[in-house]
Length: 154
Image (cartoon, rainbow, N blue to C red; front, side, top):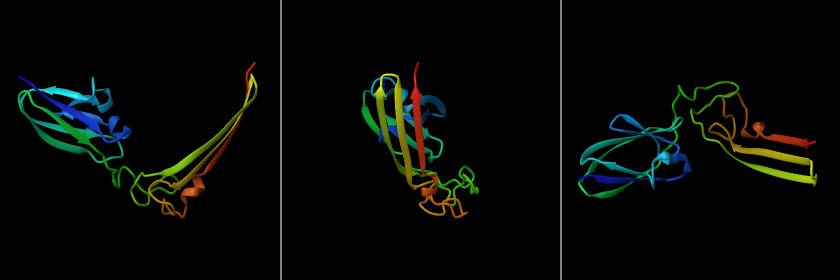
């Protein structure tokens, strides 16, 4: 008789993480059939979750025959100095990829075949910091962007 393990992702982010079962790639957490359930033989199994820019999460679970259990996955960012190396233009002074911001967008369709759009992206935190994020004095707000679009269809 087999046991069942339901993988529960803490957020959408974890649903895109890759899952390795006993060293073999199974697929992305969000691609698991049903509600993220794995049917496993009884015994000890190793689950590893991987996502670029995040620390790998590895756990050992014990599956009992006929038992149903839930496993919750939450990933944390990585401070890998090789993966997120300092760089004057796109680097990370603190080896962290975290960014935080918002996007505002206004769209106007005055006629059927015409569209006007304005979009503004504002960062409070970029590549791990609000100020001097790359070690060269650049601030997160230096990456704010205004995008204007005029669309005509004929």
